[in-house]
Length: 188
Image (cartoon, rainbow, N blue to C red; front, side, top):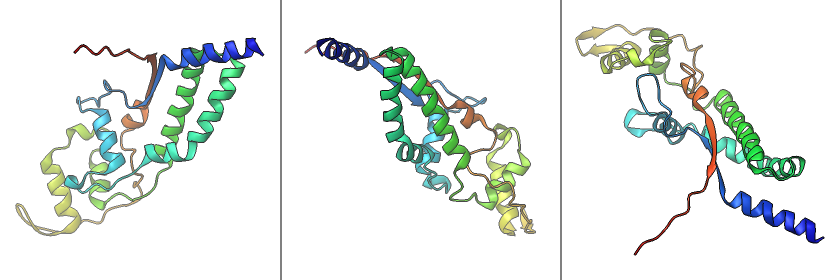
C-alpha cells in the first residue's frame, strides 16, 4: 500500500507542475495576420457591433465532453504508468479533436443571408473582402436605395450556410501545448 501511495504522490506532484493549453494559442493568426483567438472568441460569445450572434462551440465541447476527459485522464495515467507528458499530449489531442468536432457540427444560429452572399463572392480568401464589399452585400440582400443609387434585391442561395467554417482556417488552428507551470515570485 505504501508503494501505491508513493506512486500517487509522485504523479500528483508531477501533474501539479504541468499545464495543458487547448484551443487557439496566442500566436495563431489568419493569413492576413488577424488574431485567431480574437476571432474565435468573437464567434464563441458573439459580436453585437457586427451583428454576429454567439455560436458557443467551445463551451458546447466542454459541457458535453469534460466528464469524459476526466475519465480518460485517469485511464491514460494508469495505462502509461503516470507519464504525465505522454498523458497530457494524448488528452490534448483528444480535446483538440472534440473542439474541432464541435465546430464542424454546430448549426445554430444560422448564418445571415449577407454572410452567405459574401462567402459565395469570396470563397477562399475572406482577407480580400473590404468594408465596401460588406456594404454592397447588404444592399444586394435587402435591395432598395443603395449607397450609390437604387439596388435590385439579389436572391441568395442559402445552401452554403454552415456556421464557423468559411475557409477552414479556424478549424485547423485548434491546437494544444503542454508546458511547465511557471512559479510566480512575489517581490515586495
